[in-house]
Image 1 (tube, rainbow, N blue to C red):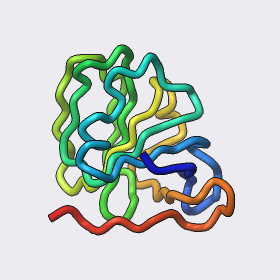
Image 2: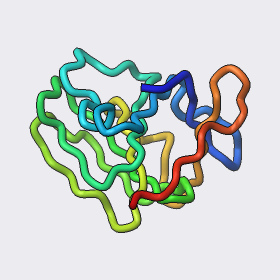
Image 3: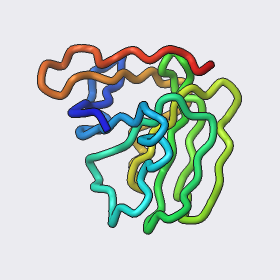
Image 4: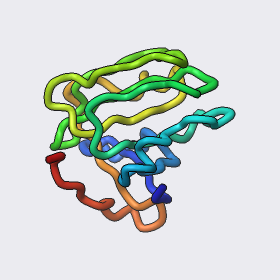
Length: 130
C-alpha cells in the first residue's frame, strides 16, 4: 500500500484522516483490512477504484465513506461489522475505510483531497474505473 498520505477537507484544509494508506493494485484492494488486529483512530484506507466491499476475515467494525470521481462524499455507512458485504452507491469511484466513530468528520457533498503527508502537495490522481 502506498503512503504516507493524509485526507483533508478540500475547502477548509482541515485534516480528516492524518494517516492514510492507498490501496490501488488488485491485491492491495483485495486484501484491504483483512487479518489486521485493529485500525487506529487516526488512520484510514482509501481503496481506488472500488464499487463494492466486504468485511470478511476482519476482526473489527469500520465506518465507510463513498467518494465519487471528483472526491465528493456520496454516502456514509456507519459501523459496518465483520462478515458483511456492501455495494457502493451509484457513482462511487473510491471508498475510504476508517475506525468506527470517525464519520463525524464527513458529510454528504463534502469535497475531500488526498495530499502527501510531508509536503502537503496533492496526492496522486487516479483515473476512473474502466
